[in-house]
Length: 372
Image (tube, rainbow, N blue to C red; front, side):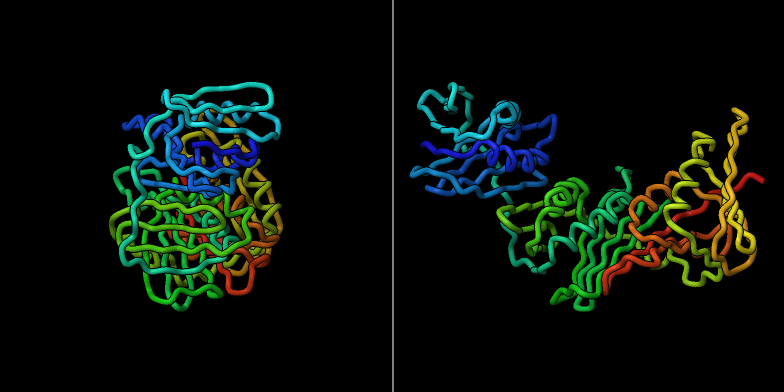
């Protein structure tokens, strides 16, 4: 079996797929890329058993066959080549020979049939989502998903599909993000929890794609197909918490402020906060917002005053500055609104502008107790 392919084209595809491969695998075969050759089509796959991803490449060949090639060795080799055609020849002595303009390189390979097969979804439901919408939904929510192994359902992003629209939710119990679209619809009601790893891989490639993504899913697995890629992953098993119940509905105190101004102040003041609690204090009265932090152990403190548009009672509320910073980083609007009810109830952060028609982003952040 033999084929010719452009070095940079192959490298670009393999770098995407390499995101699936774990640094330490229980099965040695998973340290390889699976190359499946069918005349002018080369299908390359990578897997960690939970997630399998493949890309179909157009190449020059008249052969058919499959081999598993060491991923790390191949990637390191390809990175050093300038753009040029490379000829891959599978020899009888269990090596793949790569011929470039200037030399020859031999890699040991394993038999292709040892590589685990991707799961075929039985009787899946299907939804079409524009790549740009899915990329935005992932990047807006994934940072809020938890890392707690004891609560696996909260370590992923919850996808809710219905004929009314799509909703994506992530929470770690301290912060919550709900991203909804009413301009994209599914044919029937369905929901599932996607793990973080495949979402991070998708986020990286969807940003440059302008095609539609076909999402197929059943109770156990989901498949994302677009351009020349197919990603299949196992879903997180379990029931997602009732997130609507924790979003406070009555929030009479509303603060509107420039996002960049607020973001800058929070970042500066947070440097002076306690290194364990990261606590900053917001004191709002009339049109003045006072942001302060103090680290009593080291006698460090900071305070900034900003003018804002505020409707509601004077109040003081404490937040973890890291959560606020993450949320403000993931909002793109010029103006933001922070809605609050009481100092011990969650604050709701929403963008005032910069959204598409039918797009809503709701970010919820739990307060921290202020030591008076």
